[in-house]
Length: 359
Ligand code: PMP
Image 1 (cartoon, rainbow, N blue to C red):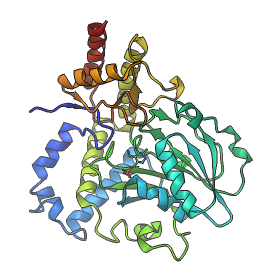
Image 2 (image 1 turned 120 degrees about the vertical axis):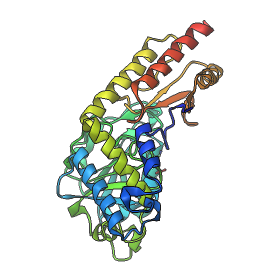
Image 3 (image 1 turned 90 degrees about the horizontal axis):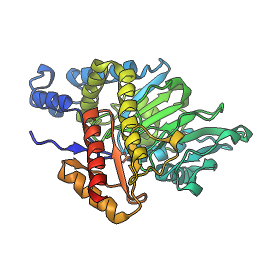
Image 4 (image 1 turned 30 degrees about the horizontal axis):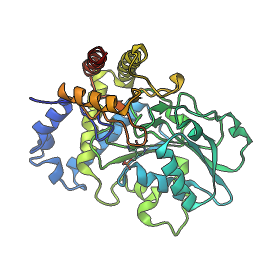
């Protein structure tokens, strides 16, 4: 089988075991005599799949009883609107910490809904770090504080949370399941599935129960969290195949030893690449050391031409999707849970070989 080493930021590499299992069950899922894609979302067979996926997510993330898990559509991008539409109360503000393009987009949508405030931003350093947000205590009447826990494009990650009584909302699209966290530190965690969870088309929302049910009456039914909570994500036809695939991904994580073990592997993988970058005289990391992401690692040389030459060199070795996001340039290696350390070793070897070659 000719599979490449895929550093795509998302949709991204999935574990081969998971893909093979899905392949083996594709025409007859769980002995139902039909594919998961052919099942009614109201059937017992699909209900079992939905329950299993929820059960596993609760287990591997240690989600407390007072949180609901919703499987929605519209991507993380629709959550940029649903969060303020459901949670931003009258006479209150929604606070945003701006750490990159995705948080800017989230803020833009919240502004359409109500009052917002930016309590910290790292825009002046081109988002090379997580800004200081200690002054947050000065703010009153906040409906929530929104963060982007891992910045997919800029390659930074929060290692601390703001100290606030307002619920913290985390767009964790590129960080979910990559490291252990305490779910009860958050009001809402949301993530598009297409990185660490499964295929694109499903968005997972983990929401504290008491935050549901406060939307204004005029809110369209499909945009109200209550609609989806009441019907257990079955108000309309959910992305059934995606929910099934998330279940397989979670079984895989569970079988490896859960998020604890995954985090250990992710830290080893990230250290290996950061060490290679830091030891190099050619490549460098634009990101402040303390704030570096474990999942998305941008790196550069001093010349766009050399960047391009390296990307081509890597592709000749089956190391693909290393081009950095157009707003940052250079290279970016996205190394989600599915990527084994051997793939990172191959990238590091290619970097050393390229550097020696062009000396
Ligand atoms: N937030 C973050 C941190 C992301 O990385 C992405 C997608 N790469 C999005 C939001 C947007 O997600 P979607 O395409 O699922 O709307």
